[in-house]
Length: 289
Image 1 (tube, rainbow, N blue to C red):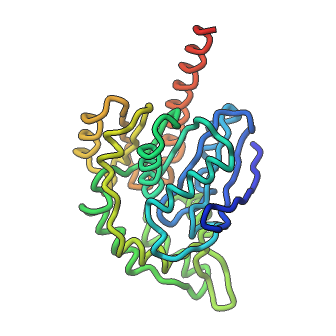
Image 2: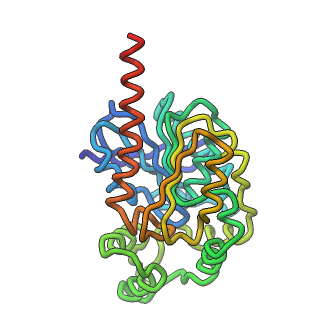
Image 3: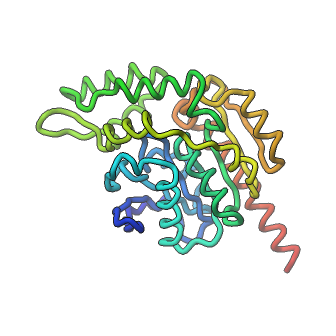
């Protein structure tokens, strides 16, 4: 699969980076990573989707190769504006949107503010209330408070990830070391704006996602990790009850980071869901011809 690295400038002058994976004429899919992740986290999913789809994986502001910004701008409306600018840059009419955690919040809010634009939506392990209450929200706040800004060497960085993500595979660990960290003269530090992101997460009130869930107007799949501390089963049942467009899948032996813990299963579920929708769309188009 071909992978290309691109940049564009958003409405506020930030230079943002994204990867294009797959054939340009494939069904467009935009991929939004989580709080401290990066575009490359989606490469395995893009490979599974294959050339039928063209994936655009965005380094959201403050992450990866994208510009850092004021910590006050690390909030939902700014992320949604960045996504709108990417969609305009790519000249997309309708497309699929996939988001994990923070990316899921941004995806849901984009859908609410831009009705009729999405072919489908996939949300990984976040729902209304996830970021405000419960063990998962407390864990994220604790991690934001306690994460060091620098490590003495790569062994210390590796040990940090092993302690904070005990179920992380060697592949997942290698990816984080390569794409979320970098070596400097003083040791190993983050590629993303760890301090600014932490300040924002600890001070900005999370977005209420219920209005977005109720307003969804496209086929939507919520994916929950079976061991998730972030998306309760009761919340998953509730979102299904309020909107008939929503389906839900739970993937066993996975934490909040489903695409890391059970990557093959996660990728297969997403590919199957989107493949069925694409088949149905082609069938309807053929029937109308």
